[in-house]
Every structure is written in structure tokens, then in C-alpha cells.
Image (cartoon, rainbow, N blue to C red):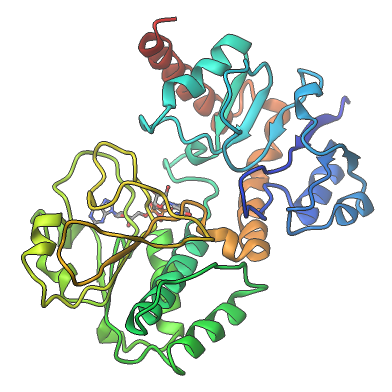
Length: 366
Ligand SMILES: NC(=O)c1ccc[n+]([C@@H]2O[C@H](COP(=O)([O-])OP(=O)(O)OC[C@H]3O[C@@H](n4cnc5c(N)ncnc54)[C@H](O)[C@@H]3O)[C@@H](O)[C@H]2O)c1
């Protein structure tokens, strides 16, 4: 039987240390008949030698453009901006199916190169649930960053560089220490609390010592009445973790914030990060923040400061645990890659790609 090739590319996004395949999952794929090629990558949390030791073939950093066209390329984050046609099959998060900035030009690259995209965000099981997602660690790390930003703001400072933590316990200890030993007394509201990101955010808030009553958990039922919501202004930290699928009234507005200088709210963590989505329910900021500058102030609301954290790759603050969890959840689908012409998870993803590509071709006038 021919072995299924798969190529793990490097990540080029600054600070990205996670990997779509870990040495653990790569080994399981090799045992199941895959040939795994791995680009050398100093940025990745796993050493090149860990992949080599379990039988992966190591190749030059960022050399996937020269890979044979029958080899699917797997990575996590989007490729660097370019107009170059893409002739390969890519498995990755491409952030171009929800009309995000630049969506049609990204899809046009696949059209011009006759390549294909299986977007990791849209690989779903028979019930429509994503087969693999980084949500839990995104919410966990986002709430941690929110608590750190809150402590900085109380001290009259701005939160500085965030570095990845070796594990969850180290993150929890660091946040508690910054808060003076515990988060007791801090009040937070998590919207989307029943989801993956939301449950991670709630878990972190519990672990740093907030009282259970001070962790307000909202999901669909509580937002059904329609925003903007006063309840958000009445907590210290608001963590937005919803999965936005349609146009909804905003959760917060600048006018609402400006009208209440006595508000309690100090920090908004927008884990959902629908920053450039036309239906962003938190239309009080317009950029994604970064690990080197994690917060952006909300302007036009008067002199009482309010910061937003809108980092779109939060799980990289816990790169090892987040990668292991994501990759093992993805593994059953990857094992079906050799039969991707018939395996539902892949045929559904292919259909969606073709539909989105057709929309992009129209939008680009190709
Ligand atoms: N910033 C990052 O690094 C990062 C990482 C991973 C995921 N995300 C994003 O986070 C979002 C959530 O992902 P997830 O995996 O947790 O999704 P999920 O589907 O597991 O959970 C989403 C939750 O939001 C709730 N929800 C949806 N609309 C709502 C509304 N109007 N009001 C209240 N609740 C609502 C749902 O009921 C669900 O409980 C996605 O947009 C995802 O792309 C961001």
C-alpha cells in the first residue's frame, strides 16, 4: 500500500510556538502508514530532534513551496500575505470564510494555483461540532491576560510583553502572584461561558481565586434580550468567548461606556476576536493586539481608562499543552486523509472550500 505523505510546515507568525502535529501524533501517523516531513523550525515548542527521533524526515525551514504537489501541507496559522498562486492542498486556519479582511484575495490564491484548502476551523463531526479546536486554552490564557492587564491598570501601568508559560500551573501561579496572592474580590463576566473558550476562561478565573459568585457566566439565554448590556460595565473584567455566526446587537458601545465614568469595567478580553468582522459585537476597538503590546485603549470614552486585549493566537501562551490537545483531537480525521475523496469530514470541508472559493472568484471579478 502506498504511504500517505503529509508535510508539517513552519509557522511564520511572530510568537507562534504551537504545532499542528506534535511528535506524539506524528508517531501515531507514521505507525498508521504515513510519511511525515517536518520543516525545521526554531520557533516551534517541540525540538526538531523530537520529530527526527520518531522517524519524521526533516527538511529546510519554509521549504513547502517546493514540495511535490501531491503532498498535503499542514500548518496552523495563515500564510504570510502574498499574491502567489497556491498549487498545494493546505490544511490550516486561513481566516477567510467569514468575510474577514482580505478574505477574497486569500481564496483567489488557491483558485489561481488550482490548490485546495481544508480549513481547520471548519472540520466538523457528524453533529456539526468542530473535530479539533484550541478554544479551552484560548479562554484560559485570555482570562489570565485579562487578570494581568487588570492588575497593571490598577497599578497605573500598561501590561507589557506576555511570554509563553511552560504549563498551566505556572501561568496560574504567575497571575495570582501579580494579583497579590489571589484574585478574590475581582469580578468577571464571561459571555459564551458554555463553549470551549468560555469554559477555559471560567476555569482560569476559578483557579486564580475569584469567588464563584464573582464569575458571572452568560451564554445564549442571557444575551437573548439584546445588548448593549449594563451588566458588562458592572464587572472588572469582561471576557467575550462567543462563536459569532450572525448579526447581533452590540454588547458594548462607546457612547454607553462614555456615559458612565463611574463604571467598574477595566479590561475587555475579546477572545472571539471578530475584530474585522462587520458584525463584531464589541465595536469599541479596531486592531488585534499582540504579545508584545497586549492591550489597546478604547478611545473616545473620557478619562477613565478601559483596555482591550484582542490577541488572536492566545493558546500559544500555553504552546505545549495546547498543541498536544489540538493535535490529538485532530488525529482521527488525519487518519482518514488517505480516503479523503470519500471520508465525510474531508468531503464536507472540500465542498465548503469550493463554495467559498466561488464567492471569492465573483468578488474578485476573476
Ligand atoms: N483569540 C484566540 O486565540 C482564539 C482561539 C481559539 C478560538 N477563538 C475564537 O473563539 C470563538 C469561540 O470559540 P469556541 O471554540 O469556544 O466556540 P464554541 O462553539 O465552543 O462556544 C461558543 C459559545 O458561544 C455561545 N454563543 C454564541 N453566540 C452567542 C451570543 N450571541 N450570546 C451568548 N453566547 C453566545 C454558544 O452558545 C457557545 O456556548 C470563535 O470565534 C473562535 O474562532 C479565538
